[in-house]
Length: 276
Image (tube, rainbow, N blue to C red):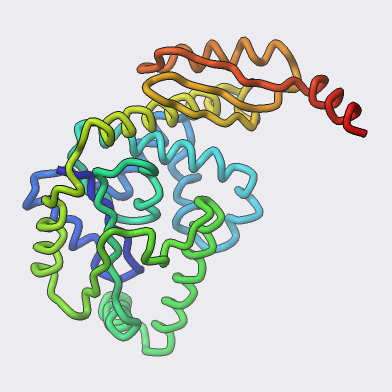
């Protein structure tokens, strides 16, 4: 069975759909739990995650320098939670967590504004115009926020495998379609997709290890893993940093070999002068 991610608009019944699918498949169903897990694993206050992913726009100036850290921690936590291959995730940017892994079913649950307005009025007791303003602002904030973190528009249907309109069907039908699709051959684990998941897990673990260390947290290092072999790329200002990075990467579970491809600042400057 594949890992299933369900992205949805605010007040678009995403939680209800995810819980129904998870219940039938007997899979864990998570959303906010991911924030809690990430905060435990990587020493970042849960309130900081909540501010970045859930609150009003004032978070932007305060936290924009740390978006890379949150992205790494969220992806690493998601990979750890998905180790047994059984998971239904609903919420923010689930479709962005498992890049390159084919046994992930990415679902987008949509609903027209009229449907969502009714849900807001019922749950929050708002008038029609107040409910509309609330939803439009919520949609704007979420699109801006996730674009900043993941560099993608979560509303783009091409980023998903299955798009469902909850206004055109009830939850039972939507759940049946998700479950039926999840059983198709295209979304079953293969040797290649399982290796891709293992490599992604190692990559996120290495990235997380680097951001957890004060000496390497601010380094811009690219991590690429193939068959358990980790290649590291980046510009290092101090030669002794390479030893620190190599030691951290080599100590990550699952890493078979670490290949350094670093460029020192002095070497980079010399190269630039030679071109002039």
